[in-house]
View 1 (cartoon, rainbow, N blue to C red):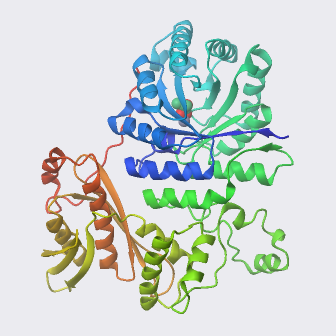
View 2 (tube, rainbow, N blue to C red; view 1 turned 120 degrees about the vertical axis):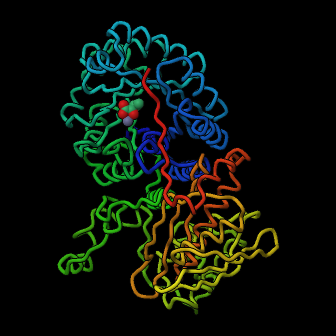
View 3 (cartoon, helix red, strand yellow; view 1 turned 30 degrees about the vertical axis):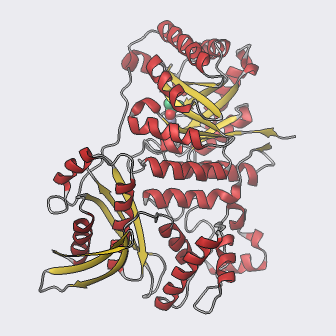
Length: 533
Ligand code: KIV
Ligand code: ZN
């Protein structure tokens, strides 16, 4: 039996702290489902005390989780630990994760505490957490710059106080693999009760060493690895879990470990993250980048055709990437369509299959060949419609370089048609204003981007928008061969999220008056941060 590594995902906490990655409740729930399908062992769902939104997200994720551990981060303070406890208590497997910095640098300048005072507080807070929850993780923040003798004293004391997992983070991404190896080996050799807890690695990527350090940690004795999907996180990010999983799988000769993570779910999980945040991985990003399995050079192509192993150390299928590029078109039947969706990782029920097949056929009338990227764009953009949503019936735009653009948009809502005309300095502006007038709820436009899904002139345009009601932001995506239609569809998706959101109250709608498109197209969203106390 190989030693099992516990995979701890912090995409929704450390990852979400990174600029551009903050998610609303619905998006966090969607991402948590994907992480559960990926079969990580622990989801750190948030930092419950950070904001009411974070608390709600941790609580909802906990209540909807299956047999998976849900953790919430807390400073070493009673009020934080209480919030984490309240938010996770309904999970089948709750975990309270608490932390305090232990390096002299942090103790002196940030916490203004002596080593002894910090140790007292740590012990008190771990005991406090352990009284509330049987599963307690303690992190020695900035562990890699902590004096090793002091570290051993802290680790021994927190294990004696009931902590079940001890995390030794490389908070600032300063260490090298040999530093990490030395740190874990010292703790394992010097702390007498170390066998009573799991040691965990949490490596940041400031020097690009996050993955190498995590691998060094497991070889030195760590049995939990923390990281995020695509390596998102504070500054240069965290260890990318998909890279860690594939490194262990591909080089099992030197990393003889196992884990429960299903590598075939990796691609889908990474796509879910980029479709929620509209941030795509860099094309050459290991494992999930668009070029990760592409062989452009003739020599490589020749080698791969003769024997894939010449240039492929792992298969695209092993991470859930489907390479079948034989295209679908208007003569393809529903059976072939459903089968391809299955290959792409989407098992459709009868109703969804019928609905999506209809959309697929409509697309075939506009575009000769449909490839996997078109299909993924189709399924990802239609996932977002609900029963009470506003949907597009029809639109007409009139635009040119010598005139003011006009849009006439007709929407359907609960079986009725509504129509409005609006003008703007361009057709997209006019169309979005018409939508705003129809739904009678002003919003600000924080972000708008347009990309071609595939190559060639008949490619679909994929529009991504982020709107704000002044309190929360809502994202939407729309895909069409007509970019005005894609703009309307993406705006409607975001507007429906806004209107369906529990947070949407009269108060927020009054606030939103200041945010209508007329006044300001670009509204920033400030990321929340919790100050150290
Ligand atoms: O990087 C870090 O030290 C952390 C801890 C709070 C676990 O994210
Ligand atoms: Zn971190």
